[in-house]
Amino acid sequence: MLKLFFVINLLALPAFSYDNFSRDDFPSDFVFGAGTSAYQVEGAADQDGRKPSIWDTFTHSGKIDRDNGDIASDVYHKYKDDVRLMAAMGLEAYRFSISWSRVIPDGKGPVNPKGLQYYNSLINELIRYGIKPHVTLHHYDLPQALEDEYGGWISKNIVNDFTAYADLCFRKFGDRVKYWTTINEPNVFVLGGYDSGFLPPGRCSPAFGDNCSRGNSTTEPYIAAHHILLAHASAARLYRKKYEDQQHGFIGINIFSYWFVPLTNTVEDITATERANDFYVGWFVNPLIFGDYPDIMKKNAGSRIPVFTEVESNLVKGSYDFLGVNHYNVLNVKDNPKSLQMEERDLVADMAVQLTSLPRDTPAFEFPVRPWGLQGLLEYLKKKYDNPPLFIHENGQRTRRNSSLIDWPRVKFLHGYIGATLDVLRNGSNVRGYFVWSFLDALELFDGYESSYGLYYVDHLDDSDLKRKPKLSAHWYSNFLKRKSMSSEGLIELLQNATIVSPAHSLL
Ligand SMILES: *[C@@H]1O[C@H](CO)[C@@H](O)[C@H](O)[C@H]1NC(C)=O
Ligand SMILES: *[C@@H]1O[C@H](CO)[C@@H](O)[C@H](O)[C@H]1NC(C)=O
Ligand SMILES: *[C@@H]1O[C@H](CO)[C@@H](O)[C@H](O)[C@H]1NC(C)=O
Ligand SMILES: *[C@@H]1O[C@H](CO)[C@@H](O)[C@H](O)[C@H]1NC(C)=O
Ligand SMILES: *[C@@H]1O[C@H](CO)[C@@H](O)[C@H](O)[C@H]1NC(C)=O
Ligand SMILES: *[C@@H]1O[C@H](CO)[C@@H](O)[C@H](O)[C@H]1NC(C)=O
Image: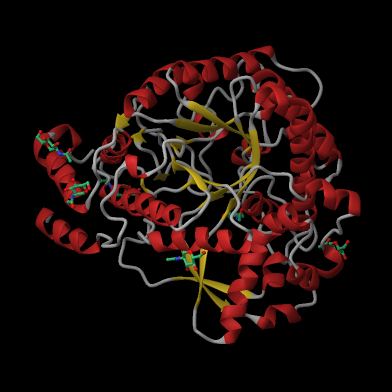
């Protein structure tokens, strides 16, 4: 069995120019880290004054059978030990998010001193070990109070409340935090939250989603996205006016991005692929760079997509120091013009494409290792948007929660994608950093505790101590961070050492 495993996986190793590399091949100011987000790891959901976010409400709604983040990985109580693990691993930066409803429980108004204290302590602990905090302000977790009061992101009121929250964070933490991301993957957030309804806040209309009790899939994704862009730009302007001179930090936003490949070489499928990029990436990046939505979106969505006033356009244009990308997977794109004939259209119908998986040679649960997808994406952003500063904010491998600590699929994945990052860097891309998703196993957005992405294993279902155990990928990443040379031969040796030398790493 083991022998078969070896043969298959040796053949599957990527044999590209980026196979043999080390940390020293990257510039010293390039940053390597790992990430988490507040609701996915903190736990302590109702402790020390925190109130629910829309994600808490969603996981507790019974709408679908979901795990929840009440306890999660209990990082709220274990952060000191976790930071020690990060330091021992050699992590240079840690990407985490602030829970808005922990620091301002009702989304606006009174501040929760214990919430501030928690993030101050976490940040201080990171700084003590020389680990740079990269902080996100909104990661799917809008305070429920704002959703209840005025519908959250579908109301323009959100712009002022988000800006006030950002102001508090800059004021309290900005002396130590130099990298701020306003909103995590707003494209997936609004597609899931306002079109299909399968993510918080679960709004949709019956023609497009399941179990929709409120919402409007034809209009709300566009409206929520518009307010997200205005809120982002407003926070960025505030940072530049009030804090940048003293704090010398950087502010950006983050986009989820597949790499799209035309299904066939026909003009239709090639054009459809450009359209898919415009709808997924251009939706947010075009306004930041050019001050307006892509033409094809305005054409296909018509009056359902909000129009930027001149003042708004000028506010949004240029309101970033960097873009963050979350990338995991490659999809094929096929033209689907029929969907434009539907009388009522949601964003997916406006996009007029069919997205399909590529043929695969790996178990369905894991992402195929296709580093060329990341390469394609970063080259595309370089070319289309005049080489903006980029961070790879999320990239990593999904395995089943109860799979082996010898997480060979994750080691292979990281080896390939970090190698590809070096290739695009050497080809002139302005990429500045790479963060593994995730530092430790977390409550996953789509799979709860059934899937895991962590470098550290946590058994959320059967271990009440939530003990952290390093996976093989943690050793691999640590070797890399500690400047060892990484090659396919080295991977095999690492695997052999783990299976032979260390029985503690055998199957759980
Ligand atoms: C990888 O590159 C390093 C440094 O150039 C070299 O010392 C090492 O032998 C190479 N390893 C392999 C397996 O090619
Ligand atoms: C809709 O509700 C049914 C029954 O509660 C559930 O099985 C299904 O997963 C729900 N779908 C979504 C997308 O929430
Ligand atoms: C969604 O909003 C549009 C524009 O206001 C309206 O024409 C349409 O009827 C609404 N759809 C639903 C399902 O409420
Ligand atoms: C892991 O969980 C899956 C799904 O619950 C199950 O099918 C599989 O047998 C489990 N594997 C192990 C090694 O326990
Ligand atoms: C490297 O960059 C150049 C100039 O941007 C581009 O034309 C070329 O396709 C890139 N190479 C790869 C392998 O993407
Ligand atoms: C494997 O183990 C040997 C002996 O302990 C050690 O010298 C070597 O560095 C290990 N290889 C890797 C890739 O960790």
